[in-house]
Length: 264
Ligand SMILES: NC(=O)C1=CN([C@@H]2O[C@H](COP(=O)(O)OP(=O)(O)OC[C@H]3O[C@@H](n4cnc5c(N)ncnc54)[C@H](O)[C@@H]3O)[C@@H](O)[C@H]2O)C=CC1
Ligand SMILES: O=C(O)[C@@H]1CCC=N1
Image (cartoon, rainbow, N blue to C red; front, top):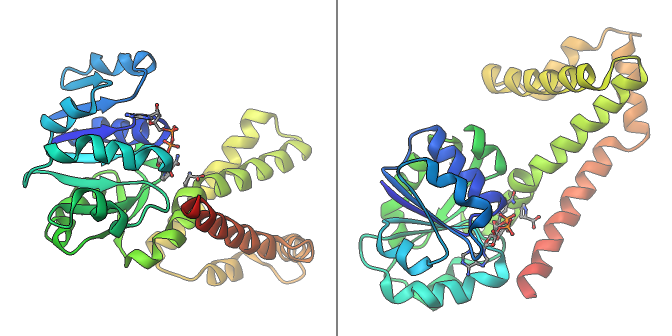
């Protein structure tokens, strides 16, 4: 598989690390305007680092675009004449809908929209995927690429904005919850390193319980909450302070912001 990552920034590099980690490419191009900070990736023999997007496109089959939304249209313009039937265009760009991509490069191209998250660097991304009409023929290929680096779900394009909040921004939301738990543990007497270890492994355990048992979170909560015990005391106080409500409101605000980004 010849993969190019156009825009090797936060997400692009996370994808590159995930691909390297899973031996997912025969060759990989990483592009960025100023390549100094990513030069070290050339230590992997099959990786080429360049600021020349056209060179990357010509020498690759799978093109993963991970630039800021405001840069995407001009980069598509710059590369569209090089696209052939071998290319699969995979966009990770927030709020940039498939019809807009088709307007620039044509509907006769394989176009996939994907929404991974930065946990892709350690093979644990939740990645949502949709495609244009022709791209349906390459959805299985896209899933195969992203399944090597976590979990995928095919969704209709009109759910992509919501998936961006839950899965991509979601990494930051969960980090803040882990951080707050860590702060609580420090207040109760653990040192900072131990506190974070306790918080992150407990978080991992909670997610793993649901993934492996298929149960509903409340079923697992019922198993932990001893009547008149400390867990229900803590949970109810958190809810009095608006825990679930503040998470839901944050998710909705984040969703609404994407509509603004799209208009801008
Ligand atoms: N950071 C995240 O967790 C996620 C980001 N996204 C989306 O991915 C895209 C990238 O986000 P980030 O990685 O956070 O941004 P970033 O700003 O860290 O990375 C963008 C990269 O593109 C490079 N770039 C700019 N112009 C270029 C050009 N003409 N040719 C080649 N490279 C160029 C920049 O130098 C930068 O390294 C955005 O559209 C964002 O909405 C989607 C899911 C998760
Ligand atoms: O914050 C943002 O706008 C981007 C999209 C999802 C994650 N980062």
